[in-house]
Length: 400
Ligand SMILES: *Cc1c(COP(=O)(O)O)cnc(C)c1O
Image 1 (cartoon, rainbow, N blue to C red):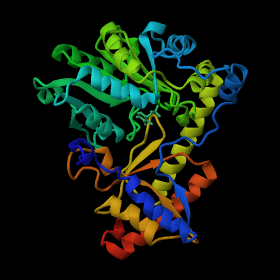
Image 2 (image 1 turned 135 degrees about the vertical axis):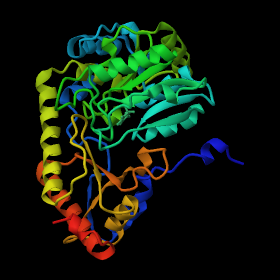
Image 3 (image 1 turned 90 degrees about the vertical axis):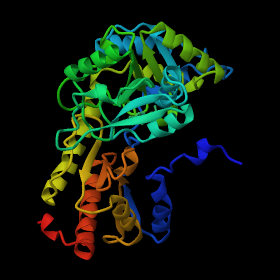
Image 4 (image 1 turned 45 degrees about the vertical axis):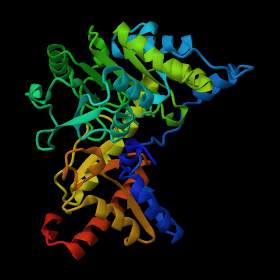
């Protein structure tokens, strides 16, 4: 009665915990949400001003590729802030970065084809791959070697391989791939006649080293995904883009874009103003997340945890807990634990992997609360862990 496609869809491991969170709230427990990847910072006022000033009489369908002003704004943003020669014609405005990823998969791969993905990865890639009928092939990376890209990628390639996809900066690991890594990947895709799809939605949120956009390469093998969601705290705007210097990719993606008519009009008008924001704005955003990440790391160290990432970008910290099943622990935090009526919700990392058994002990902490609140949320989480270990485990010595 229902398609295999939907029946095969995986329930998001974060979503799975929601009923438990709701039940806890009903019992009067306050929950700190470190599980969601949605920024809490205020959407810049210019977004709303831009819409107010330019409210049209009719909310019309924009051009399927987006309003010209926004394509120009993205192009000039790439020139100005990413040092990349991008023309408005290289930019296709999409319904968030999500649609740009779906379009990319659909343009480069047929059902049954394979796309390599650096693992762990943004869990929703699984959903886009399922919709496009594409098989994601995980390239496993290890926390021990800083999630670096394995040297011998060629062994993952067969005659159905079409592309490799990664996020840079990476959700959930916080790794930022530099120029050398990107050149290595570019060489790999060119040698094997593939595409590289680089999801740069966190590109302004980089604390260490220089961020290099894949658009700085003059290559028709590169597709970049961008979005206003994370860097401008405007997730609900649903405005993103697909950028490439490959005219054919754009022409084919345009067919998909025409099929869904247009991205949202008012939010495109607002986004033009966002893209024109200057370094002052980005500095504040970057510093805010950097301070928060430091707080989380300090708390993890204070409690004696040893295996976690020190992100160079994005706003997540991945932690390996001394538990057998981080999903069970995350659920228990909602069903059985509270510290003075409060508990903390985190994202189990299992859903960010395809390889079975991977991520079973890991969680992702999203730094999307203000400093003091975040600090308290971490104390509650660590107290929960201490209690859990006393109850269920013999590895208390892991914690001081
Ligand atoms: C949040 C996120 C997206 C989705 O972005 P939208 O523009 O809101 O669709 C894409 N990629 C990564 C890595 C993300 O974390």
